[in-house]
Image (cartoon, one colour):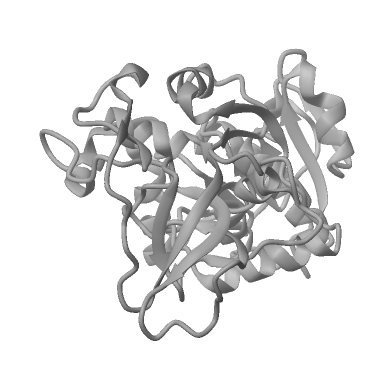
Length: 328
């Protein structure tokens, strides 16, 4: 089968499309014929080993697992022993577990009880491939918010994969959402449901009047220090990146142990079947749809990665691996 590998850390051109043996499902696993995948910031970070601490998990001098790609959609092509919750021919989508990647390939094995579910019928395979990572991450952060009391939410990076998901998921929980994005995506983010959209090229959101219960920096472009004036006592600051001098996990630990005027959250990502099932339900109800920027064929994985690293992508960048990517 064709698969993308990287034998060394570095820029996008370390990615190579090669032929390798097709995997076989072990007990408790399913074999997926992959139809579509995505390129996201995490994929690029693992490829380049940034931040450097990621090498502790992926290999100090070179990648222990040369295959990349975390999100997928496709068709079940085989079952390992003991699998009863899926059948061959099922259309599925999901996200690989932890550091066991490999979705940039024609076939992939994943645990049948992992973050995988049947594909929503109203979504194409390309749309379903983009359903998980950003929305799962956004959902993990928003799960820490008590929306009965904390309804005023500001999301920095409202047109990114995580931010565009956060806008929709927060609205689904009844929040009043202010989103920050660039000029070109203001109307896109407004169409996602944001009540107010701030163009960061025209206005510094950290200087606006008014208070928020939650500030969620979904792109890691701001900081706790810059955003704290927007939050009242008991407000929440959350960010998806480590922050200046890696301060966000330390601030989260500090406020967990000693409290403080503002709560800082920096949850450790985990991906589970119930998350995939929840997203499938929201998609079927029309309450969540992944935002897709561009689609590249697998052969153009280097160009797709280069585009993601410009920081200009809108929502998700999809990789078409099979001919069915645009079909339901």
